[in-house]
View (tube, rainbow, N blue to C red):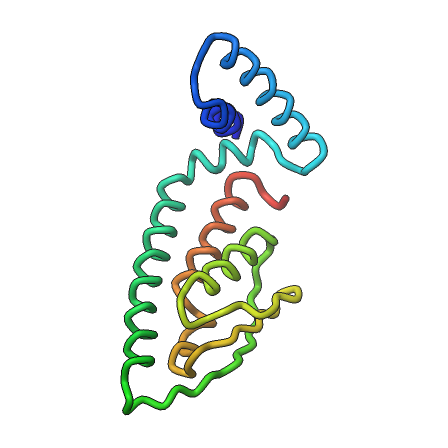
Length: 161
């Protein structure tokens, strides 16, 4: 996170000089300490992110593939005159331990064309689907399985939060 903050500083300045780098490093360290102290962030989250960068890359690659597949599905539904679209609202429960996993699942569902996460209340997700066929398998999707694996990795390394 600290390196990310420093790079954002450099990008916003548009050039790199010794003064800009020194001030950027100082500002980045101050912001990082502020985030750690007041926003519940910690160095162990950075270490966990670095250790699991491959996992996250795989997650986002699968998300990109699912987005492309869903795009073709939605275009097929819209362009086909023989297909009657039947919207559906689906509610399901998960057993995630962290809010991060819930947010990632909600965002992954919403980013996938044809589905929108309407609400997340505790472990209960409510999702609007453009067609009932898009709701099939949503409760045990690849995203749910991968996020459970993500939480297991966190517990294995750091225990409960």
